[in-house]
Length: 175
Image (cartoon, rainbow, N blue to C red):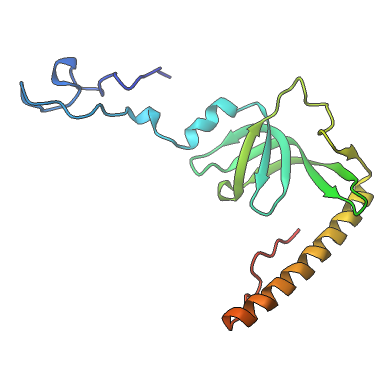
C-alpha cells in the first residue's frame, strides 16, 4: 500500500498541470484534490486487524475481542470475544462481569464505537468497578432494567398528556 499525501498528483496527472488532467497551460489550478486512499471508508479498519478491541453496540452491549476480518460494510468478525456487563447496585457498588462468547460476527451498522485496548492494561480491573459473579450482575441488571422501564413508562405517559399522543416503545432497549 502506498503512502500518499495531499500534494501527490492523481495517477495519470502531471505535476506541471497542478495534478489535474486536461487543464490548459496557464489556467489557474483548483484546490488540491485528495487521493482516493484518503477517504473515510471501512478500509480504515485495516490498522485494527489482529488487535484487541472493545466495541460498543447500538443496543448497549460491550464486546471485547480480537478483530480478525471485516468487509466493505464494516461487518466485523471477532475471535476470543467476551461480553462485558456493567451495573451499579442500589448501595453504590459498581460491578462488572465478563461472559466468554467465542467467535462473534457483528453487523457494521450496529457498531457505535470501536476502541483499541492497551495490552499493558488489559488485565486491569476497570477503575471504580469490582468483578462479580455473573448471576449477581444479571440480577442487578434485571432490577436496573425494570427501574428504567418504569421510568420510561412514566415519562411516556407524561409526554402523552402534554402532546396528546402516545410514545409507544420509544427508547426501549432489549437485552
